[in-house]
Image (cartoon, rainbow over all chains, first blue to last red; front, side, top):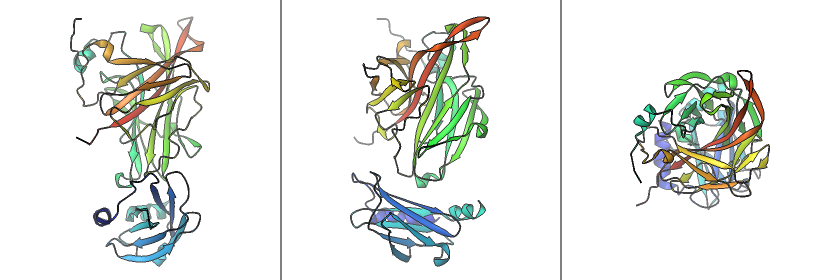
Length: 111
Length: 256
C-alpha cells in the first residue's frame, strides 16, 4: 500500500536518476533506527543533501541534513512508521528515494 | 545450401546430435532487482542444452557461493532440490540485504559424457545487481576458469555487444573458443541449421571476445578449454573439459 502511494506521488515529482552521476539511495533498518545511505554511481558519498522522511500518506515528518559520509540516522521512535516510511534524498540537482516498508521494519525486529 | 528449420521441440528428439552444447546454468528471476521487486532474488540452477530446453542431471554441486562487496559466502547448504527442464536441478531464494552486485557461482561435479569420452566441468556464474547500484559488476572471482566481463553483464539492450576476457588460472587465454547459446525459455526460437543452435566466436590474442545477440533474453557464453589434468573413468585416464560459463540477460529495446 505504501509503495503505491509513495510511488504515485514520487513519480509525479521526481526526475529520478537519469543523469550520468545517478544518485543511489538505500536505507536499512535495525528495529531501533533507519540508517540512510546516499552515494553517486561513481561510488562517491553524497556530501550535502536534505533527507526528507515521509509517512505512508506522503506527509513530511522531518527533514535532516546528510552527514559528510553520505549517511544519516533516523530513530524509529522519532517518527510514525506504522505505514512504513519514504526516505527522500535531495542534493538540489539530483534526488532519489528509498521506501522502508512495514515488512522491512517487522523483519528487522525479528532478526 | 539445403535449409531445414529445426524447432526446439524437434531438436529435442534428435538430441544425440554432437553439436549440442552443454551449459551449466544459474538463472535469476531478474538480473536487476529494484526495491519495487522485493528484497530477494530467486535463482534456478541446472545443467542443460538451453536452446533445446533439454535438461540433464545436475548432481549436488561441489561449490555454490555468492560474492558481494569482496566477501564470498558459501550457499551450498541452502540449495533446494527442484526439477528443471524435466531433470534434477536446484533453486534458491537469496535475500539481498544491501545494494550492489551479487555474483552467484557454481562449481559442479565432473560430468562424465561418454559421447565425448571426457568429463565436463562448467564453472558457472551470473551477476545480479540490487537496488540500482552496479558497483562490483566487473568483479573477477578467481575461479579455475572464468569469463571476466568487460561489458556490464546486466542492463544491456538487445543487439548490444557483450565483451569478456577468457581466463584460466587467472591468465587470459589467447584465441579461446567461446560457445554462445540462447536460453529458449518460452521464446519459441528456431534454428535454420543445427550450426546456429550454438554459435561460436574466438577470443583475440588477449583473450577478449565479443558477441552481439539478435534478441533479448538470457544468453550463455561458455569458454571451453581442456584441463591440464585427467580423471579416471572405467580404468582409464580421461580428458576434462573446463568451461567458463557466464549468463547475461539482454533487455528488449523499447524504442521505435
